[in-house]
Image 1 (cartoon, rainbow, N blue to C red):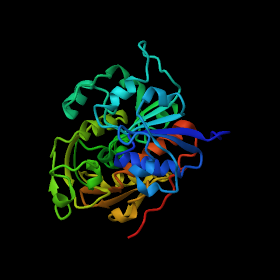
Image 2 (image 1 turned 120 degrees about the vertical axis):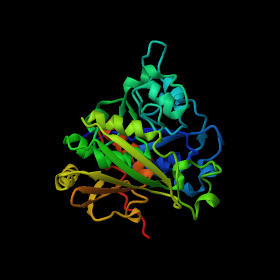
Image 3 (image 1 turned 90 degrees about the horizontal axis):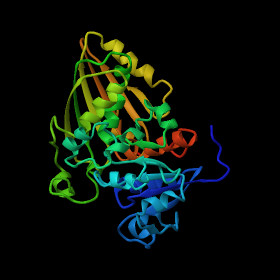
Image 4 (image 1 turned 180 degrees about the vertical axis):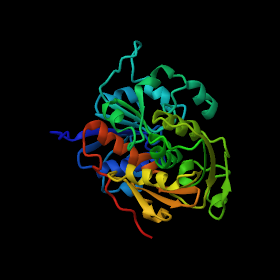
Length: 349
């Protein structure tokens, strides 16, 4: 385990979004990493507290311009919390014309730009061309519990999507044991923070506060991300994914239904896989969002029927599904304890 003789330095590029804000919050409390740069196109040179008042008296940082190559020269790790399609441009700026990195900074990308190994699949699902396809092989997919060795050895990590985290944690134990059924159905509801902080007709509070609806049914962009990750673990399935917009701010609750002749074996595989996991708790019966929101924990409940298995996973979409998992990956990449800065209990009720 690495014991740094100085605080390691981190930068958050894209500080104005919800994920950027959560990265800042977690890094400000990290015992071994100092947040030295927060960057955004808006409010440059203004105090960070003008953007995020809740950090008052916790930091004196000012907002920097998002000059990613310059920022990378002065830090150990760069978090890119940028929109899909723009992150790939920022990553490309970190390499010279011959493809060599211009700094030794580790990069954790929060967008979907480097989660898929096939640029054609990326273009189809994100509706944008992949202009940095040559850099895709440099990135390791960052589902922390399952890609640990690759993450530890990598300079570049593609942080998973929030839905992909919840569903990936659910199905990975079955894929790794060769128990993944040929067909899996998942219904998962997400909170409004998953849509970002720019109001849109279908996602802002008045449309969502007392509403529940499905969206992107069987066509969500996280499907190829999930199936690609499962394939890395040796499992293939047809994933029928039904996402839902729920009247809550934080959280993802994913319910997976599996038809199987051996439900007990599948349930045992899930329990065994996470027996020593720091942030995955296998529970009896249904998990509850209140038990994970505000934390980096993922609670998985396994319910066994005669010839079927129901698996429910609850996470905070902005923490375990984004910023918290990114800090977990940073810890692995920098040789720090995996739990460093992350052992935060949720807040009830």
